[in-house]
Image (cartoon, rainbow, N blue to C red):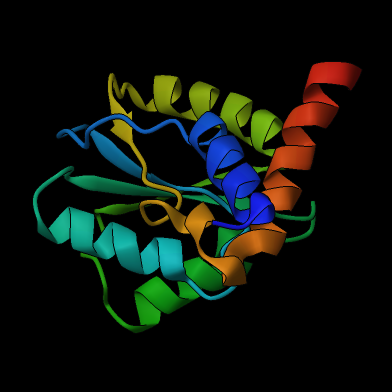
Length: 148
């Protein structure tokens, strides 16, 4: 195995934190999903009975509403969920950490006790095609460790 691949594997195991998927009050779909992969995965989890609600995270400008959010429009247009299943947590976060803080407030306001999310497919960081994402995610961890 090449040294570069060994480093990616070693750092990948450090980067990925994964708990077993369990039933929850809601499935969380984080923002930053231009191809709707997270949204589509949430449909699979919802249909499998992991949670009765799905919460989309949406970074919106002050003049926008959740109806401007592409994932919400796709979910509604394609009737992926019943109307009362889909919630939208709007925010103005600039990082995953800030987004998580907004989400925490939102789920507490909604009265949810347990939420579940699966951000990336298992071992996504092992694939060469995902190297750019891997190094981007890892650089953010270093930034947070040093700057915040």
